[in-house]
Amino acid sequence: MEHFVILLAGRMEPTPALRAAIEGGRVIAADDGIRHAAGLGLAPELWVGDFDSAPQQPPIALAGIRRETFPRDKDKTDGEIAIEAAIALGATRLTLVGALGGPRSDHAFAHFILALRYFHQGLDIALEDGAESALPLSATPRRVDLEPGTQFSVLKFSNVRGLTIEGAKWPLDNVDLPFSSILTQSNEAAGPITVSVAEGDAILLAQCDPSVR
Image (cartoon, rainbow, N blue to C red):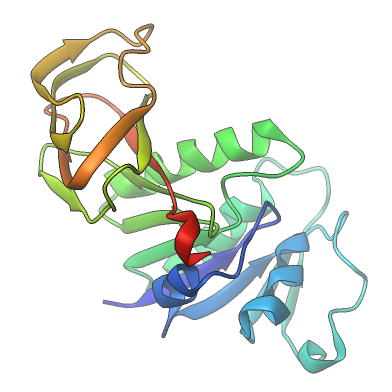
């Protein structure tokens, strides 16, 4: 499995858990995501984007990085370009770093949509920033090792059928929910949880254990 780490411009806390999640991955930076490279001790092999928000030059330690420049007026985001570059290089697993928080909520929303798109194309994909983790869901039960008391939500992007949550304070068993329902907001893990969705688009969003930040 070829693992690529995509550095995006949102929030990032260089926690031990985040470092473990990206260990061994090849790295591509999207525009201002380059600023996370030094904090994580990474040397991207490629830096892409329109560079409207990134420094004109990367830190001196990254001065030799290969750059691919795109016009500002384009029909793809810099993150989307970085993901597609990784796929062209053989990626089958993606970790999007800095995808969840930041100054623009529309960027975080776009990253959820991209995660679902590429997950449905068969890629193993996760969104991480050291404060939160997110994973697309499917009919295959997904076990996530959470500490007791960890807060999590299931974010829906369509109507869902057959939502099952095990190992939580408020479990669900094969429940159908409309897109407009917020029943799956702010659940609490009793320990490791297992989540699946028979039909529909949904993402598990979990808070990271603050004791290991």
